[in-house]
Image (tube, one colour):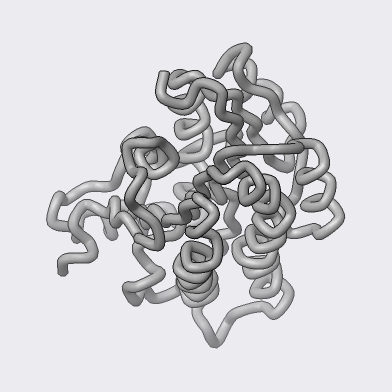
Length: 240
C-alpha cells in the first residue's frame, strides 16, 4: 500500500490509460479523484474502482471548469495529466477551432490545473505530477501535427516544472506511450493505430494497463530520485 494517505487526481480518468492508472493507485491505498466530461460515464467508472474513488465532472478545455476542479479537489499529492484531445488532421486540412481545442485541453488546461494545485504540494513539501504525453511528441507521424505539438509542449513543461518545484520536494515526470489500444484512440485513428503498433520493435499496440504501470511507478515513492524525465513506454518506438 505504497500510496496510503495520498490523494491523487487523474484527469481523463473515466476510461483507457487514465482509468487503469486510477485503479492501480486506488489499489495501492490512494484516495483517487477521476475527472471527465461525461457524468454518467464518470460515476460508473468510479464505482468500478470502489470506495477509494470519486468522480468530478470537468472539461479541461474550459478555464472555469478547471478552476472548479481545483476547488473541488482541495489538496492533492499526485496529479496525472491524462485528459487529451487527440483529433488528427493533415496540416493543410487543420481546422483552426479544432487546433485551438487541442491546445486548450492538452496544454492550457494541464498548465492551469497544475498552477492551481501545486501550491499546496509546495507547502507540504511533497508531491508527484505525471504528464501523459505521447511517442509522437518526439517522432513525426503524418496527420498528428496538432496533437504531437501539444504533447511536445507538455514534455517541455515537465522539464520546467521539475526545475521550479524540485527544491520543494515535488517531482514532475512524463510517460510517453506508444500506440495504445483504447476505445477513444480506435474511434479516432482506427487501423492507423494498429499499423503504428506493428511498426514498433515489439510489433504491437499497448494495452492501457501496461501504460498505467509506468504512470504508477512515476507517481509512487519507487521513483523518488527521478524528476524532469520522460519514460518512453512505447514498445521500442524511441529506439528506431
